[in-house]
Length: 184
Image (cartoon, rainbow, N blue to C red):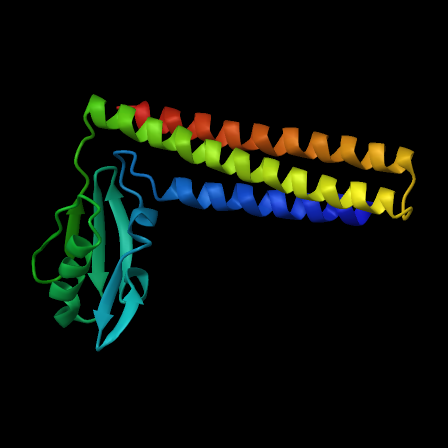
């Protein structure tokens, strides 16, 4: 019985963590180093993550600063940021690359929130699929007489509680991110 619950909890937890990771990539109008996680720079023929070819920092709420480990990488870093299609316009002074984060318009903020809601719904559907799959396994075990009907009911009730908790966790994270996006 505990195997079903542990498996279910583990899978649902992974989905919530994945949702959180997706949220970090969403632009909020404030500078965040995680916005550049997907940027890969051509480092002597090898595509390397931006954070492995330079130091990233946010000196203020509207700027990301990239200090490359090698000065000759500045142009490659600028190209990689442009190619990543993040809507950011990097500029350099020959020593560091500054990436100003433009202010989001009200319309763009609403569009981002709409996408956030879509992402959260996908996460919730994924959690419900996990519940369904585990419940099917429980019912199969009951049918095969491996567990009793009472045990089956108890496990299914516990799985439903887990599902409710994880969906609530997704909603809480969505609400927090929505607030962050809508704050000017």
